Image 1 (tube, rainbow, N blue to C red):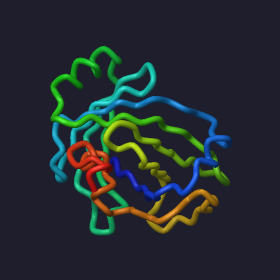
Image 2 (cartoon, one colour):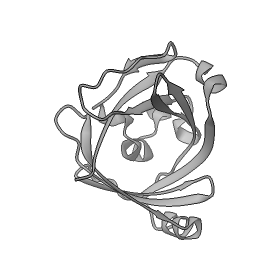
Image 3 (cartoon, one colour):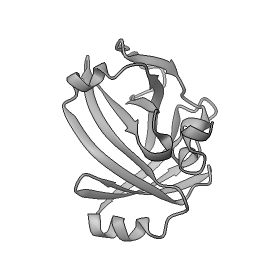
Image 4 (cartoon, rainbow, N blue to C red):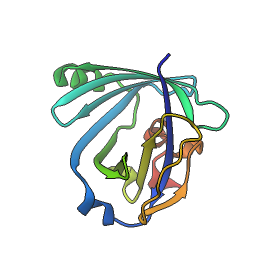
Length: 156
């Protein structure tokens, strides 16, 4: 079974940018944003993706995830069919003691939000927290991209 285990954190400074080994612009929308099954379409640089995610478990740490790479043209066409509200962000990747943090800097109606995610092998796996990592928001549905697409950060 394809289970994603991740923790999410707010980011307190942009110091991570000088540590980043990757930076890509992401645009994404949702064909379905219901919590039981989100269907996401994404362009990430010059690549396209279709992703289906199930509901999170009680802790918010784990959920089913299936992803398939599609052409960027297919993704751009599917984005036209998506629900109202698009996510626009730049993703930076930073390696910290063997783990990769994905840090998203949001634009548009989610401007001002900077969030980091770390994928883990188990819900109890230990990891080192860099100095720029702030409050944990794992399981807080307001920080799910599907929620942000319908309820932008600037309106909170």
